[in-house]
Length: 182
Ligand code: GDP
Image 1 (spheres, rainbow, N blue to C red):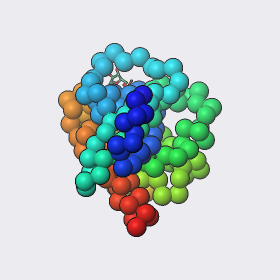
Image 2 (cartoon, rainbow, N blue to C red; image 1 turned 120 degrees about the vertical axis):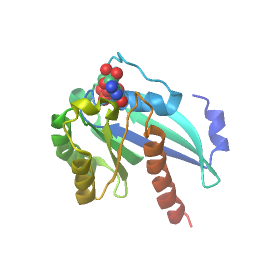
Image 3 (cartoon, rainbow, N blue to C red; image 1 turned 135 degrees about the horizontal axis):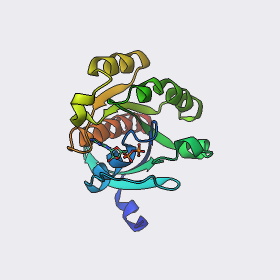
Image 4 (cartoon, rainbow, N blue to C red; image 1 turned 60 degrees about the vertical axis):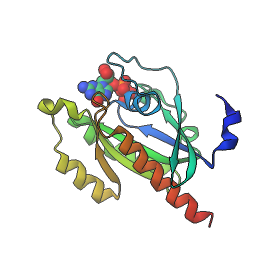
């Protein structure tokens, strides 16, 4: 990666993607970093890291986003995955209730390994598959409120709300970080 560019950036923010296998993390990552969607995406071996530079409130931010793409069950690297992360996108698939039920387990892991003021955004993915919906939007919203998280529904396939979800997470991190450095 061209680290010479780093000097131009005001901040480097590490964020992680978590959630069950197949919920669409890898496609959220490629949509946000490269504006690509992969219909037959195959699980990546190991950790996938993507970058994107964005301007928020006159600051140039380099977002470094980590995904595990299908490796969830084999991830023996939990503490290093979370180390230094300022944001987490916790993803479930609105067409598979089991991935919503798993959120509790993921939040438990987040709270065990994540930074104390980690910004967490809950994402219900695949809204283009409305006819197969198993989790109502209201349920996601109520769950997020109960756990003190932001919430958004997205479709990486139709490119709906993906940019907005990442921007919401990164803006919140920016606000917390800039308050600390005041
Ligand atoms: P991951 O294992 O969580 O990284 O999930 P992937 O990004 O690899 O996606 C798993 C499967 O869901 C793949 O077949 C994707 O093409 C599909 N997928 C991901 N996002 C969407 C979406 O927004 N809409 C639809 N219809 N399919 C999606």
